[in-house]
Length: 340
Image (cartoon, rainbow, N blue to C red; front, side):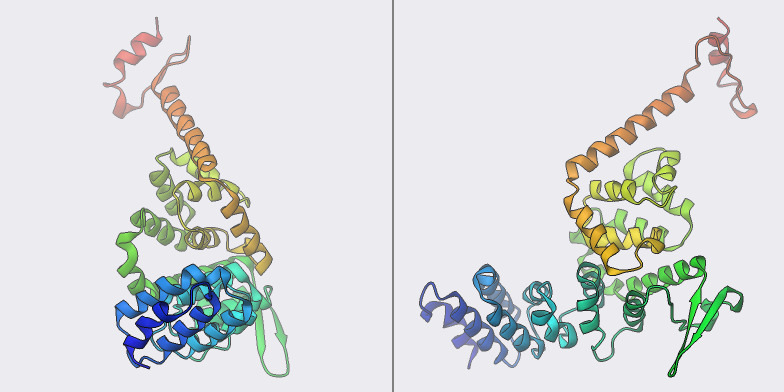
């Protein structure tokens, strides 16, 4: 079938036959040896509006067909990958249109069923393989790099018939989780660079992501204070305990996608996501949090910042304010007024 045949399908197919059009368009596309960018766009424009009207069997057929297609349209593949695993499995296992970053996001949203299908990919990134193993057995961390886990951090060894796995202290496990995420994000940096200009707040996201992945709380809190335009002490309080709700609101106010918000949160709180249900709960809470509500919280933090600044700048009634040596000359007028 030629490319002209593919372009004429929408014209000669009877109107109202969504399933027939959906399957025929994908079949014709898959027969093209090297489709042009325009033809890839045409397939997406044709099939995505029909997607919700197409039965499960047709989605399964199309997923299987596109899994073998070298130039599969990325938007349609991503939509199919969000389907239950019995539909998405061929794409999760074989499709080249699914990037490593896409795979991590899919695991975050769908948990073990998708993760197990992804684990069957040939040449799977070792970082993703480790994350899948961590999801399946959250109390165990397989050590790939001996230098990343010193002998003194090992607290228990379980020997099985085929392998030995090592359980680690929470601090080492958290650092290993950050290391895996850092490695994964650097693996996808080239792909991200092509898209970053089109993403609002990209610089803010990258700064928050990179400081979170350092594992240094003060670095991340400083970046968060800058991003929200709030006082450092308030930013510090947002991540001071094992409750990610304030951070969730902060990231939602910045209008980050749920995938980006999750990557930042799991870097700050790696111990809070030991199993797929915890990840799904986070993503559900993030989706349900309206951005206006998040912005109200940030406005409250900004008001608190202004109040703190006002308290620091103005003397309290009857108090005499003491200036530091460096500020003594500038504060002489302030001390005079406080003595009145």
